[in-house]
Image (cartoon, rainbow, N blue to C red; front, side, top):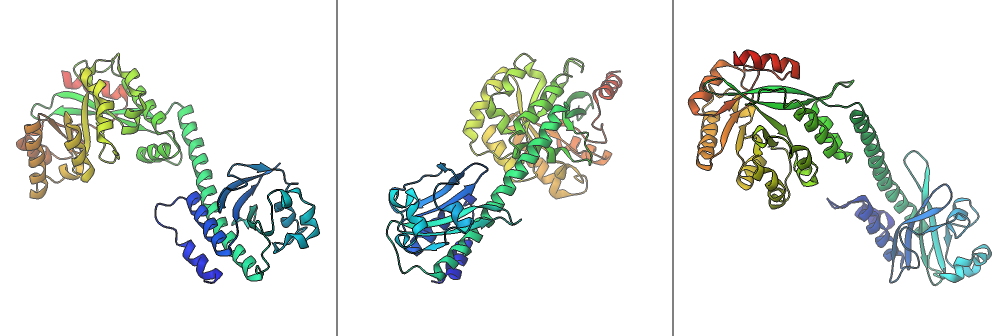
Length: 409
């Protein structure tokens, strides 16, 4: 197999293989093809170099994470042009024989080429060596090393870009948290038959330029490792309004499984009246282990905090959430609600979910109600509560309090 054929085969990275694992596979393929004993990637840093990836036939004399000064070994000397990239027999290279590593490891044959990133910066070196000399090594082999160094450089570029992207996201979310964001707006939830005020959905809003929707901020926070912090901040701001809102109303708080798992939610809710709290798990929240989530929610639900599945009907996940978590509240997604008055398929789906809720003792909230006709249809179908622009837009606390006083008159 030629160098180009082998490189093309290796470049087809299997789905799900990380950059780090991929580089390990590249090293093994390269070392095996050359018939040498050790292959490694060394990253050059300001004061030393670190072996980031190592593959060996048997026990390796070096390990990932080991460091050496630039003065030690072959790498820096190859980059500086003091040693050739290909040494088939170190005993014939006087400078190589002067280096302690040559006899200590030992190194009988050595190949080394620089790894360059896409912007031309030197990352380090890709190296292979054998304990014995190998006179069969030639120009073809060093060309193969260069091809594989390009492959490794491409993967390192990808990895470094992801690190930079994560750092930038972490800084943006940290700035959001430092500015005490997000703020909270409150959308009223009404009893469908009487249109009496029952509760409020608490929705996050961000004051940023350029404007971005809340879902993008929360997604970025999760990618930066600050998702739980941002969610917790939003919930803390929401529950701070609980005492000001009518005592008979509840707050619906959006909550991810990751926040529930963290154990940080329970302490901030434990001194609040549980009957006034509903945790909403969205259709878009991935749940890998329902049993774990159920156990994490148990202390809250035992106190009387209710569980809601949001966006029901928007996708398959919400149905799985309902079956596995037995929620107290099922929220019909606006994709079902909007147009339900003139679409028999939406009515049929809503009717089946309402019947399911009746059998399981859940209540049904329809969100996204925008017309009188939709409201009348939902009343006829037997949903329990409704929310939407027809009934009240999300609004800051001061405006929500004014609206609440009007409803209570």
